Image (cartoon, rainbow, N blue to C red; front, side):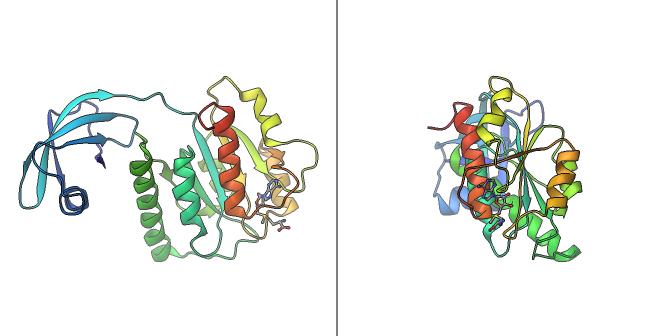
Length: 243
Ligand code: SAM
């Protein structure tokens, strides 16, 4: 059993699990006093813990020493906002495949419009999907999900990195060949993927002017959600963390 619980820099000896965390652990997983759980703080630390007491609406856990698994390369995914619940799959499986940050982007051909209230509700849901996926796959960190922004702002928000824009019209350079220069190092990487309708040439050129390199994933035209997960898989494999 694993539970995500943000903790201060100096972790306390005991901690209280309340609300949704308590419900999932005690009501759903039927955890009992004396059971061991793994607590992860979402920022890269894990703690072996033991349930010391269960109250009406809280569980008290005794925390063991922090364990800090080796961090994977920071990979930001700037994702052209797709229709429906495709972004859910990108968040869920992208978390399993090592994405550290998701930056949803409104692009010229995005069909999805999100206003203030709906955007806030979606962002909360997206963050919960990433947290649940991190819990399930054993990560110590929870990927950051940024609010959806226009493409250039989303790209800037993803932070400094070696940036690759996935461009199905790129004939020369593949992602794996372009990534070779970053191999063996810990440079952060940013991947930019278009929505169902793709990125316009102006958008690709703008991203290149901002330092991104256009790369191909091969001859097939992949769905946006497939392209994101395939690109993350390529990087994770080249970093020796997948297959
Ligand atoms: N122009 C595409 C078409 O003709 O269907 C639409 C875009 S494709 C469905 C969605 C996104 O996935 C693209 O914007 C690109 O970022 C990425 N993508 C798909 N196939 C790719 C490939 N072979 N190489 C690089 N990127 C690809």
